[in-house]
Image (cartoon, rainbow, N blue to C red; front, side, top):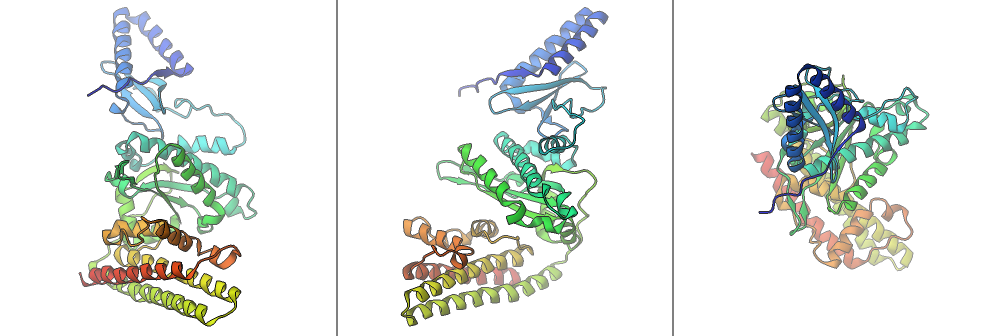
Length: 435
């Protein structure tokens, strides 16, 4: 097996100056000790170039720390795409590094997008941050980029808001959850399957959870970033207020308890902790699941019935424009039936419904809960892919776009898939309620 190519090492100018001062001081005290410690630092840096992950995660987001053996020093560094950057050589007895020690210059100016971003990235975080060390290095780089994008785009989206709570709105936490947080991600380039990055953003006001107003651009940029990296990495983003999350934790909701237990904090503002999860008995959970099942499965049935009625009206009309409108309404109602089916599954199984109309996101979240849902959409053919994309677009375009068109064969194919999804939804939910 071929050994990995060593990464080049670069010292920031302040790190070089710091190293020089440290060893000038040691030389005055004891030349032999200074030389021995210098050799130890050089050997440690050489090891680092071959194995950058041998250290611990840094106490400042985006950095790592490696104690130098037989010396009082700690190397603080950052792993770049194709190099290692030494940020500081710190004495263990010195104060903990500040933003300047992480290689970030702070200037006493009014906060801009960039300065707020830098300040946020170096704030201390809770012990959830330590779990980031368990992520693959590629995922760590992706998440560092994602945090920057989220903070930047949120700043842009809120700057000109008239309402003070929007203009001064804050991101309180950014948390990675799901398979990557649990260490059970799948990366299969041959089979073209990649586990999703699931990201929760917690904000300080419910109004700031509006996806179209504050988050769509950030999500688009993150998708572009992942696409440009050469990995077709799926990404799911959910936004909730801290009050909402804590309310759900107090009620012992499984979805939120799992995030607190397993999630990785990519960014946190200090002073805004999650509340201690409450106790939810099996009986209470089953009763609530039953209420959700009655409500949401009925909604799925009603939406499907509406779609079938719309479809029947196409045959009764002789006006082509009226036929187009009935088909579009059928497509929208099929979208709603699919959406309600996935809502039903998630509410019954984990007592959680995401604030999303994105069918890709909803289907993947549901498929993670029950593998029987995988393959329902049969998108391995061109016709299947086209039908599914028409359904995805129907939530907006079937209602508002004059260019949206769907034909009878496509509606019939989609209806068959929705009926299959409806059947699976009933089976999955009733199994859960019976258990």
